[in-house]
Length: 377
Ligand SMILES: Cc1cc2nc3c(=O)[nH]c(=O)nc-3n(C[C@H](O)[C@H](O)[C@H](O)COP(=O)(O)OP(=O)(O)OC[C@H]3O[C@@H](n4cnc5c(N)ncnc54)[C@H](O)[C@@H]3O)c2cc1C
Image 1 (cartoon, rainbow, N blue to C red):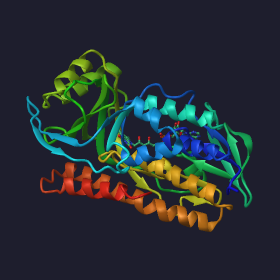
Image 2 (image 1 turned 90 degrees about the horizontal axis):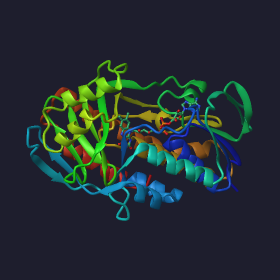
Image 3 (image 1 turned 180 degrees about the horizontal axis):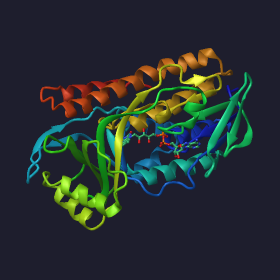
Image 4 (image 1 turned 180 degrees about the vertical axis):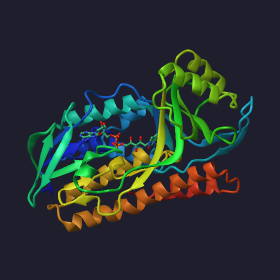
């Protein structure tokens, strides 16, 4: 017996597809509605920490993720300058436990493809060009509208529809993501042989510079600076700006700049933060992932938290036989404090960079939050 037999999910990002895989595997009838026309083929890389990899294992996709990504241990800190001197080699906490690498980088479109295929293989129906536009919740079910047409009655609607969630608005949650004052340039580039783990540069003209390997031949590089209105610059102009703003960083950045000059794909976005206070549900409608919380990726835990939301919700829906207040209490008790801790730490790390606080205990904060994440979600 499960608490639901038919559910709708808005959004086919990591959170929505993780919920779809888990629930469909347990025999629940799952419809995923995705507003975009097709799976995104563009996008930069993503860092996935052990606690995210642990969720992939429970979903049965760990071996595919492992084969497609670039696993690494530890974190290298370098300083600006022509030779990019190494300042420290930090051991990582294995947040997924000893069975998984501390971290892994992979191209976002590759991860999306693995999750989409797994959701469909588990029996979930995933429809693109299908925007959830309305939802009327009654005691026994939710009537969902997609593209302004009735799409059916479900036992539950999961709003995994990202930062600017429609579902969050439909259930009158007023919390909205707020800019943190930082913006990030990201480029998908080739990996110099010497880059074998994430490397970060603090100091210099940018708040943070760095890169993470995503495969034998690839990595993503990023520069974090003051948030600026750069959203309408052309692809060519974006590559030129990132090239220019990276000049203070040497070593592997020479190779990054060569790729930028050759036309590497560059993306610009702002960091945001928010967390919805409990409850994240209104009756049989709930938000998870970026719809419920967002944070600057200063500790690369955003997607991991969305995956954990999906895993915990799935577990409760499978183990229990009713969608009742005790299910929601258990869900919030397991998810709120953990997501809040990640948002707080991520925002604090960013704020220390904005304030130029040289005495800040960056290492201590990163280590402390990693130890928390190493506990089961
Ligand atoms: C610059 C940057 C770097 C980051 N780096 C990392 C990192 O290295 N590691 C990490 O763990 N996290 C990182 N994150 C965070 C991570 O990207 C997000 O937390 C994660 O992708 C959110 O997943 P999601 O499934 O909740 O939402 P999304 O991935 O945003 O998916 C939501 C989906 O819902 C769809 N949608 C929207 N509205 C509707 C609707 N009404 N109906 C149907 N579909 C709808 C959207 O088209 C989208 O496909 C980073 C974030 C940023 C901004």
